[in-house]
Length: 97
Picture (tube, rainbow, N blue to C red):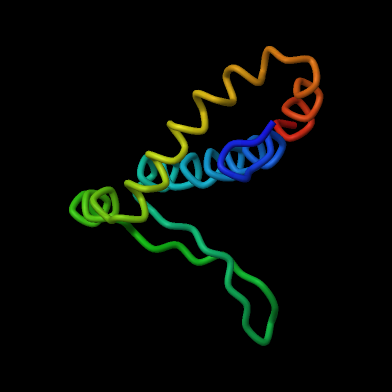
């Protein structure tokens, strides 16, 4: 079965990736800091950038954030159905580990 050319397996993977991105940004919003791994001549290091409430609100109004959340909500309703189908249970469990 496919949904507009995407297989159920592809929908499951896309949903998982969107959920990861949303959770990552929600963590940044909660801690009010953006964490980024950078690299210089000495190797990788962690850089933190403080986030103001105003900047967080600005991000939440960005088209990409709205589209990401909308897409996630729509695919998540399909994933909830697929979770009950034996054929996809193992894939969903494996991805969520």
